[in-house]
Image 1 (cartoon, rainbow, N blue to C red):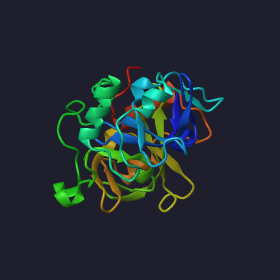
Image 2 (cartoon, rainbow, N blue to C red; image 1 turned 90 degrees about the horizontal axis):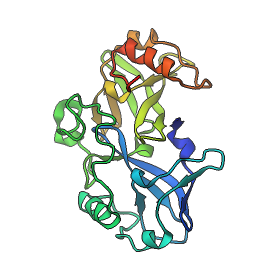
Image 3 (cartoon, rainbow, N blue to C red; image 1 turned 120 degrees about the vertical axis):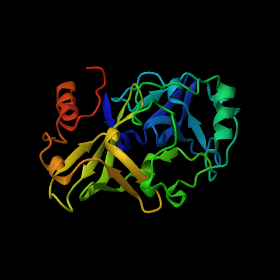
Image 4 (cartoon, rainbow, N blue to C red; image 1 turned 30 degrees about the vertical axis):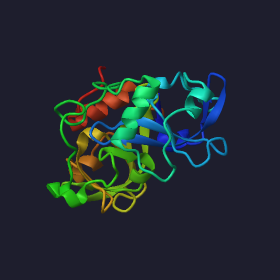
Length: 248
């Protein structure tokens, strides 16, 4: 099921023996747009700590009750490697998490690949290739979805709008589409853009480049934000833009 990522914020994270907290953010790999971590707001329970959980620990999401079950105990999370709330997630900390919980660091590999050469293969692409455009987090490919919201999106021939939200697949935990608000150019419209279209990210100037033209976007299959997205609609969109599919 595709869900806007901001709608998942505030969902209860429930362990096998009680509540852990609520969803506050998602950290994705910017090479594959696969979610690597859920960030959990634990309230006063583990105050001062940043708690992240791997998608492989998640069970079936209950959207009616706004519950995300995880196959863990509260004690297991309590005793997990500690990271101060203000600290970035480093690769070293990720490896400690994988080792402590026994999670597979390659979970999700191959489910989604936007690089054209396979997931986790090579560096992400940035405007101009300048190191000044690269992320400053300790783990350079790990990015917050909250941070990416509102980024400006540029086609090959001009600006097409800004990221308003993103659609996540709640089974594979990959970002399937960016929802682009085109009001500053094409008033009253929103379009879906797959990460397959992304050719560059400038984190200093909060910009995303895509390999489509403004005319191509304007002539794309219409999308009604109030309508349910189904496979037929996705397939038409992917065929139109020439994006790979998802095994339809």
